[in-house]
Length: 253
Image (cartoon, rainbow, N blue to C red; front, side, top):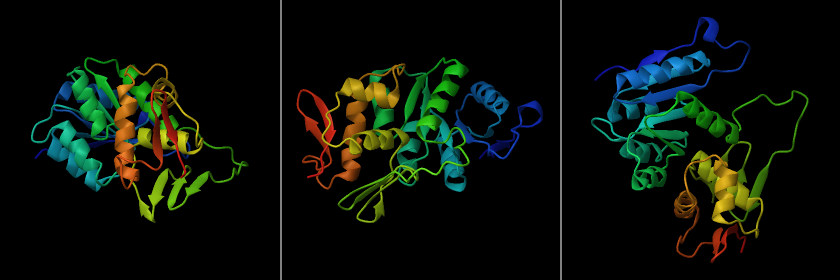
């Protein structure tokens, strides 16, 4: 098995100051694509590991702590969907899927198994980095906080459910529930506005952004996956409820 390559930014591309470099795993069996993405991310001061098949990717993910994974769908040994599914069993690291397949079902499957975003090849590296930045920003990983500011911790407790927005964690009955970045953003928006009904269009624009190329089915996929994780009976939800013909809302009863 090919060893994963670990590259550090240096020279003009190196980070200065105390900010830690983002650590990214790029997974694709096309060496030219990996080389291009790696070079561009290094210029932004990121640390980059590379893997060229699904099994190698899983080994890297289990043995390292990554800030994000760029994951191709069509991989040797283990495809991207299977990798994504297995990663979600133990990690909520953000995943952006890269694939030449543009079929809607492939996109839905990627989201269904835990991907945070989806970009179809051929792509512009600037678009990839913009999507990465958006996920980092929504995850609270971009930008330093003011040194003198000490805002109150944003924590919501509803019965046995505890949503900690600073730590980006959700626990139910003392057990941590792994959520993807988008699942957490969706949960946070609904939970901190209990009873407020959001249409799928508003949720898509708020959580994914107005420039997101997907459609409202993305919202339905994430709501269904959230219910499977947080509800004791997903078919009769307690938290993520539906207002038929309107949208979704957070209930506390």
